Length: 301
Image 1 (cartoon, rainbow, N blue to C red):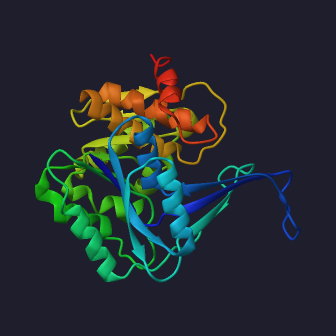
Image 2: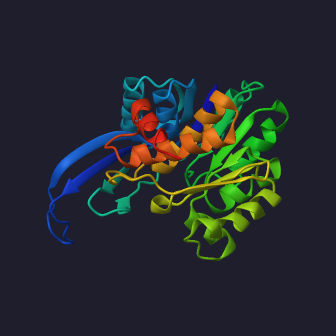
């Protein structure tokens, strides 16, 4: 079973408009309302690929109820912990303006709810995989991912972490199976600018020296790089296609990689599944289906 944790789920309100103008009333042309958060996205694609998954996390208020309803409608098993105060965030994403979005804060997570999550995680068993992905509410410390890996370190489960800065660096001493920075996040860690696939390899190896197992680096239009735990480097350019929606593409890459590893325990296959899933989601209005992923997989050399 692959479990995902989304500490700060959202309703993603994705809109297009004719032209956005500051100080004016802007009206949408199209609208979508989807359950969001990196862990939920990973579980969605895993579920689409037929991989057993359960989404964990916290929800609050009327928006939390809608997140649960939408996740349930997608057929994704979940076990969210309800928070009594506040409401889950709404993220507004302007689709015509790539990367432009307004993200909500999310609710305060009290200590007793964190303890409930720990107790759920304590039930994970050998052979399970745990994915920790995305940002955390301001009420939680930057050590929360590290605290979870430390608590579960002796359970012989696989950890995948998709986070930035301290959330990521703090976990390396517990040897996560997979981390997935993008090239900009990797460059930010080391204070460099990385734009070519070959440039990311030495810095991925530095993260391995600090404890990471497999380092998967997404690079948008430049493709992706995997430095696997055996020391082998895998590189692929981005498949040809039209960018439709970049939201969730990185999460889809994580899901594809884990699905591929689950299927064959082969890093080359897992890497191809990762880049296929990430690209398929980027080329689609919604997160990628199995058919869309396998179609791209067949084109990769």
